[in-house]
Image (cartoon, rainbow, N blue to C red; front, top):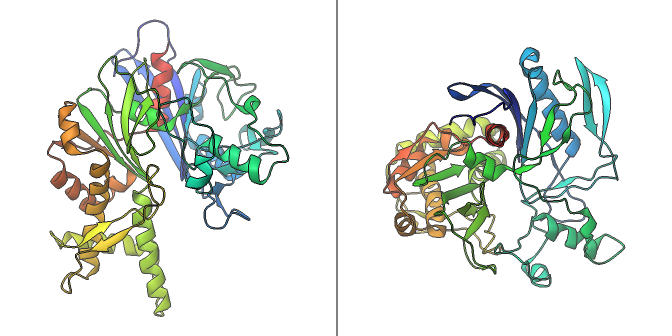
Length: 421
């Protein structure tokens, strides 16, 4: 994608604070367009138990997330960081974190220069949080939006805290941020940071989903299939499309605001690579209960190899162990079980097929065809490392599937900063 004309930035840092990892990407602008110069990612390992929230709470330690961010920046070339003029930021959507007044961070001297650390902040309650039951959500005011309210959404979580933990009732509207245009400037860096000059412009926070799509979507006839921790199937709606005024809680497709007044139609499943991870964890636990110690990292490649040997499986797996936003109480199931198809290979093949079929049940192929989709851009960590999953994608979708245009929210955030200038 070519850079916009005019005297824009020449080096932009894109930062994505994801659900399981942090990524930083340096994108440079040349006469030929934009190019990824360097990138670095670090797993946050930030999951934290949620006291008093049973098994429904999903929280992360903010200090560990910031620590991973500082490690990413420390690993990037100082010489290129010194050329950064703008910073674009995206992060996992829908969650919420609280901090005390202006004491959300503190600066300390460490390594090559100053770095900030989280200070007097709550845990991050993520988009995966399940404490807001359907009964609780139905008690809340109807949103003045085409998007339905769901557990894990920041505002719903604030309502939950208001009812269960905070002293005062009602919604603290003053906590909500002002909404600005993508690419607009929120402020400037107050001091040098890992070599990034003081005064570098920082863009307003952007949704990681929109930035991910922005990094790879070039044609309106493309559908973007991303399978990472969760899974999404996305297309760009026609020019001038406007979503309905009221939400439809039963709809599996949501319309997300995109850039330049456009909208994305999104089937966002809560079940993706996390289901495969849960399956691997189950196999490891069974092995342990039988007296064997097998590392999960060794199990994954073996079950994929076993599934590659089984081209077909009559097993039918509905893999929705995490429910779906439009059906929060949905459970998983296995049917059509035959005695000859109980191997790990058969089960893994059926599980991978079920993940793709679940997305297609949310956004049917016929509907994609009616909207003019001509090809699918496949991306995401789970899809990249799982050949069986790719085979099932190519079997189920009647479109050419193109790999290699991986979605990258950090790169997308940087691209937005370039193109807004």
